[in-house]
Structures are given as C-alpha cells and as structure tokens.
Image (cartoon, rainbow, N blue to C red):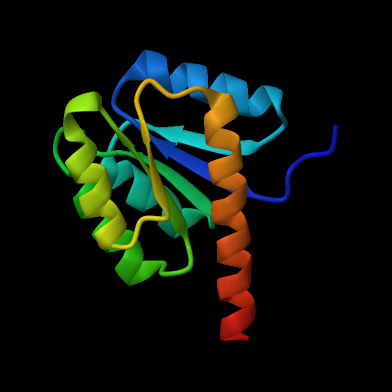
Length: 132
C-alpha cells in the first residue's frame, strides 16, 4: 500500500476519538498529526505545512469556527473538514459558509472520512496550481 500524498492535522479535544482516528489514519499510512485544541492546531500549522485539517467545532478555548477563520486568513489553500455533533449541524453549515470544504457528523466512520480527505486534498492541489 502506497502512502497517500497528503498530510492531515486532526484537532479534537476528545482524547479517545482523537487517538482512534489517528490510529486508523496511520494504519492506512496517512501522514497525520493530532492536537487537542484550536490554538495547538494553529501552532502546528505554523510549524509544519499540512493539506487537510480535520477540526472539531466544539472545543474549549478557541472553537473550531474561530480556528477555521484563522486558517482561512493565514493558510487559505489548506482545506478544512469540520466535525460536528448531531445537535450542531448548523455549525457545520455555518463553517462551510466560512470556507470549510465539508463537515462530518460525530462519531464518523473513517471509511466516510477518507473520501472527504481525498477530495479536499484534490481541491487544495487545484488551488495551488491556480496560484502558480
């Protein structure tokens, strides 16, 4: 199995969910980093480029929508997939209005998430080509 060409950053304050998602991504040889908060996600992005950010909407401190807006300003080509709970579909839609690529309901299956990540990566690549 070849390593996918994209790098993913996952930001979620639920440790079990984050750990499980990271393990599943690694099993599929996806280069992924995990952080437990919004500020940490922005810090990681400034240190190391990624293609796709999977971002929980509800996190203490800086929530996912605030982080999304910061990513849009500082790293406009990075694609963001938001994670929302059942009660917060509206925040997923709001996130898409703010520039997110897509959103997924928690808990989400990796088999549903992988195609979203791949499509987000393709959109990022097209955006990079357009800028060149």
